[in-house]
Image (tube, rainbow, N blue to C red; front, side):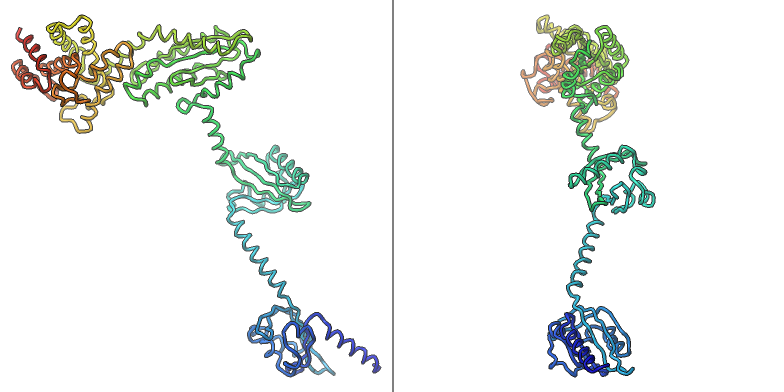
Length: 588
């Protein structure tokens, strides 16, 4: 090779060596540094003067980087070309991530040294760390998200998925990956999803859709948020919203239905009255029904039994009506039935079916009965509110007509029930009435008061109707709880009587018939003449009948014992003046 060519090549190499952007060092066969370029100086901080002739491993603290890195220099000087990533340390001891490229220098086939090239990859390494941390965070987030995620091709093919729990998937991944939504989902759902894809590409915004699927464990509702990833892929985040949808449906149902009877409520009925008020629905009939005696049932047996009676009435109406008829609970004890395209004759037949069905149903031995009114709109000019009022007036008219009969039936039923479960027999009542009448006549009670006294004795223990039979006929001492139930019967009787027009005038007497002259009685503990007169007479008549005839837990007393007992209790349990009257009657 000509000298000028050698010179040119040497100068070219020297220029490349010195101006390379990568750090370069040359070492001899003894691992000692011969030369470095400016990039080496910039990267590691050493000048050539500081490190020339020094062992390369010592200069770059290769020992701190680990034994694997120490072996690299030896490998290069053994004739190998290497390219590996590693760590080297600058003058200040700071670690630097570098890509190391090593080339041996051979002169006449003998190892003369080596070149080492160091490419600073610190930024790349930091970026890799950041990327790994980001991927770890994303994986943690994905693992915690309870939603399903699907990646679709623009034509609807499933490309990938993520599931917090694979049991959430409606199908196995191998059954849907690589297949189209048209192959996997019902046609209507698949079409909805494809329309959403096109809309997302059109608007470049996240699109939201809802759909439902019939799965092996029942119907499920889903919400999907669909976002464009690129021009060929979309991401869908799918959430199971079944609980939310069922809750919404339940709230809607509750807003339109009566909670007790499960019929429609008045809010719904008001809307239906507007909807049906058209010529096409004529003739439109309206039936209004009222459950008789609800207050009496509530006051006798409590509201739980009253609720049962309302449910029975609702069931009777539902079973009597057609599927297209609209039934609603109008108020406390009132029901309304709307009958579109139904004339007066057919509506009247329905009223009869309801009334006949009532004859077969009772609650706590009390027959269920309803007052019913009906009206029909046959002319579009008529005001539907007027038709509703006409049906209501008809119902109230029937209720007034049958009220006394209905309440008498209820009363007879209650008294018969009480007689069957206790000692309050008709014979006991007649005996009380005889002695009470004698006392009343002796003290010259007016005729009307004698009649009221007679009714009072018939009704005085009606409050026991709601006490368990085993308490009423118990042969032995009552527990505190049982005695508490007994002591409540005057109040229950008071409410029953007050709920009925025919018996309201004896309600206060019923309430007071277990009060004592000295104030030791119940339920209010009143005394003396504060106790109504008829209640005081009833107390004496009741005690006399019990003493005379006895009870399973108490034997009958002789006439002498009865007289002695009344004398003993005069002024404490009983009105002393009435006791004198009673004893004077007994002498005759």
